[in-house]
Every structure is written in structure tokens, then in C-alpha cells.
Length: 220
View 1 (cartoon, helix red, strand yellow):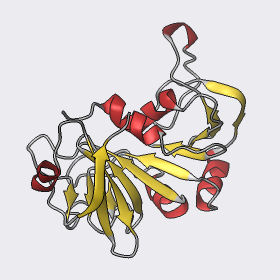
View 2 (spheres, helix red, strand yellow; view 1 turned 180 degrees about the vertical axis):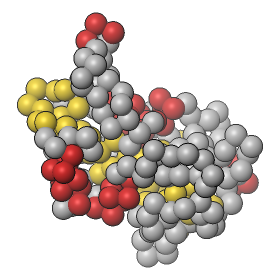
View 3 (cartoon, helix red, strand yellow; view 1 turned 90 degrees about the vertical axis):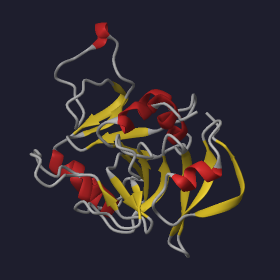
């Protein structure tokens, strides 16, 4: 049974480590803020100038002036800091962000990512995606394994404009978890969703992938 968006982000939250500074991309990745393990001290950063994002607010807690880069209302944890977007991007470009969790429209077998535009469709701008994939130490992608028409989103080569090359470290989809083998430049299938087989993942994946000898169920 494929993972839900909430389960995908719960699994992504398991990659967080105490003391990490983490940027959450627009869309599904923002849900990770709700699943930070108890007792873990993680500082969430937003490109529009906030370090210390808390969980999404309840209706009674909404502050229309407090938003993330995706214009969603958020909360700020005790000790949070506000600053200019220039300072925010200096943090990103300077290598001060430990991990970024992003969505994607395509990821290639080499670890390239395309997530900022579809040719012919209006976009507001590339945002901070290119800076993030170039300046952050670990890039984790959360996405559906296949598009609505069934096409694989993990492809041999991205057909959409690239955001970054050879930068994705880990891929978490509704079907599985894959980790990049840096020496072979291929993703290794390490976990599958409950009831999903290795053969099913292979059948629904265009890219060339490797299979770990001990593939296990996704733990959520």
C-alpha cells in the first residue's frame, strides 16, 4: 500500500539529527515540521528570513504576518530569529544549512533534480531552489513515485529544466526509500512501502537502480 503524504514526511523526519539547521521546501516537505522527533533540537530555516519555524498553527494561533517561503502561516519556536532574505541566502550559499527537504517533478538516476518549472507554464520565479541544491550539505527529495498519468518521476535523464546536478542524496516516495551510492552514482533501493514489492518498484521506475541486499519495510 503506497505511503500517504503524511507518512512520506514522517519518514523524512527520521533523517533529522539533533542540532541540525534544516530548510523545508514548498509543498509536501513543509509537513516535516509536524513530525520532528520529541526531544530533538532542530532549527527550521525559511528563505524569507526566519530561523526557528515551529509546527503549523491551530486556527486560534494563526498570525497572518508570520509566513514561510510558500506563504503558509506558521509558528515560531522560542529563540527564533528574524532577518533579511539577503542574510537568509548568505546562510544557504555559505554552507551553513545541514539538510534540505525538497519536492521534485523529476529526479534522474545520477541525482539531478528538476523542480522549479514546466516549460510553457507560468512560474513566479525560481525562488531559492537552485541556491539550496548548490549550498546545502544533504538534499532529501520527497515526491510521488509516478505522475498522474503513471509516468516514472525517477528517470534516466530529466526532460525538464534542471535545478541542480548530482545533488540528491536520498529519495523518499510513496513506494520506497532510495539512497544515492556516491561511488556508482545510482540510487539504491533500501526500503519499500507496506505491501509494495521490489519488482513493483522496478516496474514503475524508468531509471536504472540498485537493490540493497536487505531491503526492509519503511518504518514510520
